[in-house]
Length: 255
Ligand code: MG
Ligand code: MG
Image (cartoon, rainbow, N blue to C red):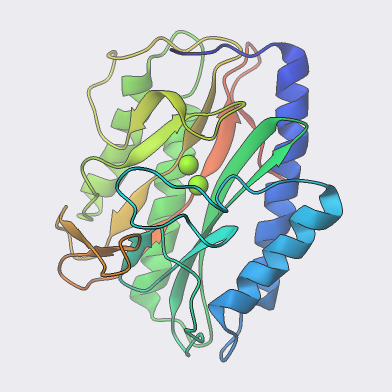
């Protein structure tokens, strides 16, 4: 069931989104060669704690997972696409890192992700990140009243395909509100003019995941959580929580 939010709810979600943005900024600021993924998780935890926010990631236990998620961020490095578990890994020169974070404040949820490089970047990684950013921007631009979810999906997919990147077929964005994952599903590819109609008060997490190797295949790592590209190529993942409004798309996960 799709829940349309009141304007008061949108304002509350904006505050939750602000906490997510601050946590991600702090994580990127702290990320450097030699820094451990658990340290980055601690940085995000501090931001959530100080804001009085709860993590929707910590303890999350969907049916596919062998154990509850142990952290407040997903940290997906290099060939990891999404759902990377912060473990003992320490960042190395040239790593491509995608960090996903959520926050629940006053019962409302924000969800966003960033991708960045550490140390000396491979130009190919910067292009992958920039293209993922463009795919997200295109998806957000399509999140207007009168459009349908398929218009967002199509806009994202067009950018990825034009750049010959792969995308995990069955992963995508989602409605969001009191729960992190609500209807509708927002695929990262699709036909324009199809799917749920967009209207004022619909809030969506829009999140392209692009894989440099150009294939759509991925695999689940032995930890049962981390999804990696099947070909070992690198991946990027960038996400915002976005409200459809009569005044156009409103990004809720900005600082
Ligand atoms: Mg997310
Ligand atoms: Mg999400």
